Structures are given as structure tokens and as C-alpha cells.
Image (cartoon, one colour):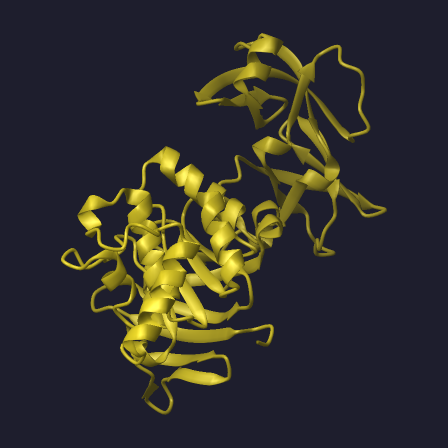
Length: 369
């Protein structure tokens, strides 16, 4: 397949509801994550690609074939798109066995071919021995695998997964993330996966598409998009913990000096407009290092005297807010917090490397027009 397996530009309008306006969505090989807040239109995008919803305008092409063209009134129905679709609730037929659920869409095959293909898929997903069980007799993880088996058994050219872990408890979700990525890698089927969980996106995705208020506003490799949001909306959607307005003081030798609150920071001057004067400083909590006030200097350019303001514990991790001339968030393990004896008012040094600071020009604060 070519680099862009699928390209889509379309508009879907619901009566009395928001418009979903997708512009130049591109899907290649691997796993692409469709990421955004609840209500941003992620499921609608999947349903339009699957042929379960018909857009009002635009064009969807996949593998050299046109699936939808509003200008010519062309609409290829779902059954002809060779798309595997797994909805949030899995939508298994409660009265059919596992084997019959998985083989439900293989009507064009002979009985022998259907049985062989179903058996191969069940074995691949670790479901051998469960062929005769009904969905109600399966665990949540097993139901997810059956839904995935039904979606891939026909060898689709595109797989669509709508929040595949939404119905699972946390331990099962964490265990199945790695398994799902392994399965998807094994099939080689290009996949578009919907989630609003940042950790799922980082664990599963090769590329990410950020959806905001029905529009795709940024697309690229997952680490790049999460560390370098295009604007404040993307920074909020991707949960950047520290976003502070700053004044650009100087740009020299590819480095920018910024005044933020009562502190000065040095960052890489990536793609800053020549006339930029104000920026938004974005720093992820995991990129902040906290050390004792008497610690030996490191090679990092930003060493900020700080004091602990609050400590919010979440399982094995702790989110620590410090005052270093501006509010700064850092992510530590509980063990590290205990070993350092951190408490409100505790003096320390916050270290942030220049490449870990992302600057958004003030003109980019709003969404693209």
C-alpha cells in the first residue's frame, strides 16, 4: 500500500448539533490514534469512515478507491469498504457463540473456509477452547478479543477501534494495552484507534490526530505532538501540566531567553516568528527534575530555586507543584518523594533542559481559522 492508505476531507452535520469538519486526514500503515476530549467528534469520524454515517460534503478515498464523494453523490456502503469496526460496547450478538460471532460476516466463504479462518483467528487471539461459549460467559477481556477477532477475520484493509478499553477495569486495561499493540503489529492492518487517554495514546500509537470541537487541528508522530502542541487548545487536550505566558527577551544561536513570572528560562527557538514578543511556555511534568538545594550543578541550562507548594498523590506517582518564580509541575515517584522528604515549603532546585521546553507563539494561542 502507498504511504497514505486513506485520505479524507468531509463535513458531517447533525440536526441541532455541532458540525464535524475533517480536513486532510491522512492514515498510513501502523497505528494512528484519534485523540480528543469527550464530545469532540471522534466516534462520528470513525462511523463516517466505516460507512455507518453519511457526510454532507467532502471526499473519502482508501487504497485507490473512492468511498465517498459529495460532489458526485457517491457513497460506498459499509459492507463494501472492507473495514473492521469495533465499537465501545463490542456489540457482540448475545445469542450467538464465540465462533458464530466471529464468523458472522464471512457469508461469501464456503463452510470449510469459514471454519478454518475462524479457527485461525481464534487461535491467534488466544480464544481457542471458547468457541461454543456465549458472550455472557466471557470476561471483559475475552469479549474484547472476540470483538477484535470478528473485526479482523475478514482481513480488512482498515481497522477502526472506538475506545477499545472503555468497558474494562483498570488492571485488565493495563494488561491488554501491550497485548493489543502486539496483535495489531502482528496483523499489519492499518488501524485508527479512538481514545481520550494520553497514556493509551503513548503506549499504542505511531501517529496521533488531535480532534478539537469537530476539527482535526494537529497530526504527527505521537511523541512530537504531545511534546510540541501547535496551540493552546492542543496543549490543553494533551494535558500539558505547566502552561505559562512569557515575554521573549532574546533569540541568539538558536536559543530563546524568556521571562516567565519572576524567573528566566532558556529554550530552543523552534519556528518562532521573527516578530514574536510573547509566547506560551509549555513544560511536561515528567521533564522536570527536582533535586536538593545543595545538589551539584548539571549540564541543563535551567536551574530554578524553588519551594514545594502542594503534593498530589496518585497511586505510585506524585504530582508536585513548586514555586520557582512561576507555578511549575513535576512528576515523581512516591518513593522519590519520600526519600527527599518533600513537604509544603521544602526548598529545592527545579531543573529543566532547554529542549524540553516548548514555546507556542502568542499568535498561535487560538485554533486555526
